[in-house]
Length: 220
Image (cartoon, rainbow, N blue to C red):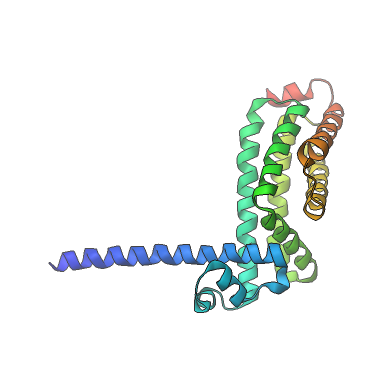
């Protein structure tokens, strides 16, 4: 009988721990939405609690300050964005795609994500801007930027450019500017009229600078 009570207690504790993890994640996702839709100045425990549909006491239980809440929420957004791009690059890299095919695949994926989660992308720009004024946030932004550059370098190495490390900075900077422009001034034809042709021209230009046979040599 005692063993049954112990098993029941463990099961209840396990369910309680899962609920705690789920509630904490819901609070973080609500914080991302608030920052992306209203700006970091709108981030308060009350605003996040309302968005997450949880008691105000729940947000203060998990996060002592709105600064901690912002930092943890942005870290989650950055980690998930890196993971999403990593899946995309690792899926495309082995295919030996042409520059036009790389441009088409990347444009479709990035545009779909912009449509699905615009607030997340705005929130990440908000993180970068706050980091320019708050040194405490710079290490998080640096980790995010290094990860994005590493993935871009991996993709460009697979595409056969001659200097993947430098080219990665060019591509990341280009994408950052184009995505920001789309978030500010929505273009319904962004994928096919803006992003895809720009990336195709950029990839072809970078690939053309590679020595003859370099692409084949890198894939060998």
